[in-house]
Length: 194
Image (tube, rainbow, N blue to C red; front, side, top):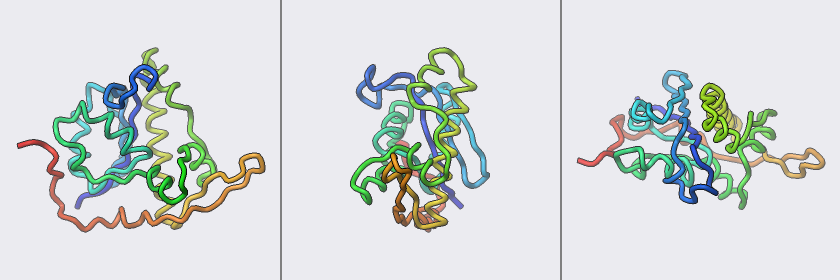
C-alpha cells in the first residue's frame, strides 16, 4: 500500500541570487517516509535515490510545497512533477485564513517549539561545507512539518499566533485526515515520459 511522505528542500542560492525557484539548486533534501517511520537526508548528488519515494508515495506533503519545493525539484527530476499528488500545508492555511504564516510561527503556536534556524542560515551552512549541520537543519524542518500535519490530523485543528505581543493564539480548523486515507490504486505515479 502506498503511504505519504513529507519533504523539505534547502537550496544553494537565495531568491536575491536566483529569482526563479528552478535556478536555486538543491543542496539537501529531507524526506520522512510514513511507511517505515524513516527520516532521510539526500545531498544534491544523491537525489536520484530519493525519486522512488516520490514515485511510490500516496501523497507528498510539505510546507510551501507547490510554490517552492516542487519547482526547485523540477530541473533534477526527469519526469513531470505536476503528476505527483501533493498537499501544501501553507496553501491550505492561506485558503482558510486568508494570509500566509511561517512554519516557525505555526509550530510554536501548535507544538510549543519553533524552527532551529532559517533558510539563509542553511545557505551559509552549504557554502561553508557544514553538511552535517545543514542536514540536521533540513531534517528538523521535515520533522516539524510532519508534527504539525499529524497534529492537524489528530486534533482537526492547528494553532497560529493571533496577538504576538500578548502571546495569544487562535485555532484554525483543518480537515487534513483525508490525505492519510488515500484509496487510489497502489501503483507507481506515472510521472516519467515514455
